[in-house]
Amino acid sequence: MSDRQAAAAVRARIDWKFLLGLELTDPGCDFSLLSEFRDRNIAGGHPEHVLDVTLDRLLEAGLLKRPGRQRTDSFGASDITCLRTQSPPFTFASIGYSG
Image 1 (cartoon, helix red, strand yellow):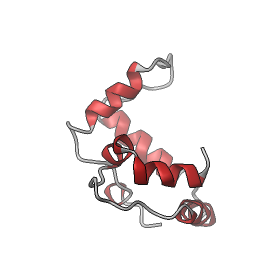
Image 2 (tube, rainbow, N blue to C red):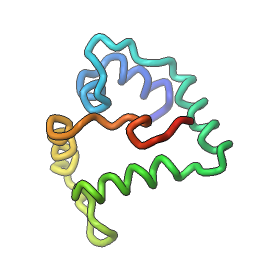
Image 3 (tube, rainbow, N blue to C red):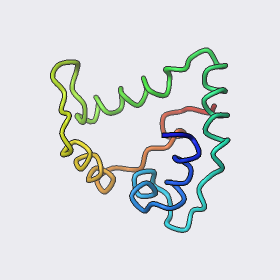
């Protein structure tokens, strides 16, 4: 999915807003912010930091298991959707990432 398509999905799709913890009235962002975020992350010298911290949090919460056999069916996606009602929304600030 391109940055332009992702930004459009955040603006138009309720499920994306829900998973991102946004209000339904949230206007979303310009697609250029996604590439700027990626560029800043890479320039910071630790491009894997956000992924590593996110994976650690998922492991701590018992939502992800150590390497082994992983699910690839659609139930995994619906399980993650259900989690939105059971835990606070994920934000970059919640993992201590300041860009």
